[in-house]
Length: 69
Image (cartoon, rainbow, N blue to C red; front, side, top):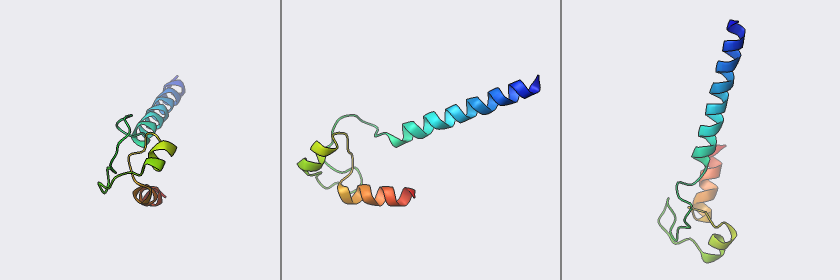
């Protein structure tokens, strides 16, 4: 019987970690920002149109993605 509980606990932990990971990957706000949250520089209109919910300028986004690897 403890095997069933152990598997259920493992599954619950995995689901929690997946949900937290997904939540951390999403921007805090769904409103399009005019300025980069990292450097404060204005986000170009073309970038805001291409990625409507972006919160970083292209350079800061590249740095962010590079740091995550």
